[in-house]
Length: 448
Image (cartoon, rainbow, N blue to C red; front, side, top):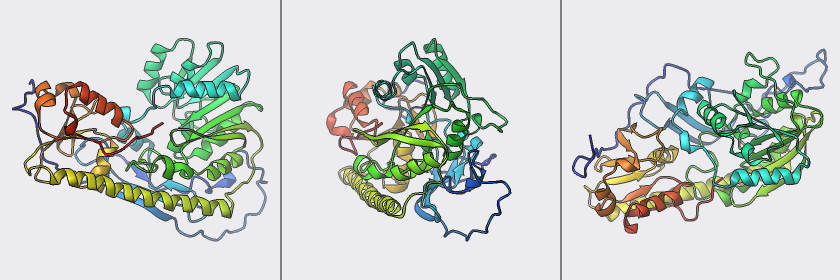
């Protein structure tokens, strides 16, 4: 049925009760940094050496917790999890716990789609940086390659390999990038010499992980396995967001540093420590301008039992508390913007929300955007989200909205996105929406 202004599917917010899933979505795990260090493939400890009983570490400390977090769409209440960030009571490493099971990850992130990605030109910048810092590159393996944009930006004379867990990205990459070898695989198990899904890595000169390590449930295991299988003179490039820069670079976004898809939350010190004990020696590191990215170049070496020093750990915790204080302040500011909007509207005014991703779920929990008196529609440009429902509210494609509603409607349009806000504003203006109707929650957002 063609939508008109008169038959728009405006709906009130209706949160389904949480129900048990038919599969396990989450599990409790130990600290990815300090647990089971003796099982490292590169450990030099003698198998026959006596093991002393270590005292139990203090319990982990909860830094942030959002219960009953729904992923992307209504699934009869069966896609709800606990989003909890903890600091290890033993080593201080910050991680998400409970963690997603492999099946849970696939189920929960099925509709993520355009929630992932990078800004235009980022892959070209990464390729140029690599050629500047690693001379005479003969071959590269990009782990988490997506659709292959970074590999495509490298010279054709370089042997290029890519692996990703998303079948859609790999299918598209295969179609678009001739001369590059792509494969589908789970990063956590694909490189394990003992894993059922073992897939030996190509013999390459450089391995890259751009914003991948923070998504893995066991990042140290992946680093150890890569080191065990790579050539002795291999180089490794890793880039992650770090808490050291979160307050400066992510202090506006209410999703921010502790996003749902990041499972390990690094500092510069903890990243260096994890690389060292996994058999990688950092030779160069730098902050990447304009967003929260910390990039390191490492070479294969012997595993070193390195921990974060007490002074560095204290700095990390100070940065964590500074960031969380700013984050809470930003939540208050966003909620205040919405409160001011509501105060200016008649009670019966309908509202359009552009964005059906995790940002809108954060708004559900942390702001007063939804109540039982107003009606909503949600717009999203991602085809994966279109045609679904978000807490009972229809998610529509922008083109499904009648042009009359864009041009002459009175309903305010709340942009529920941090990184996508500038592009969404431009799309609305191009559709003839009056600037006074556009409610932006952020100023000058900067993204990866």
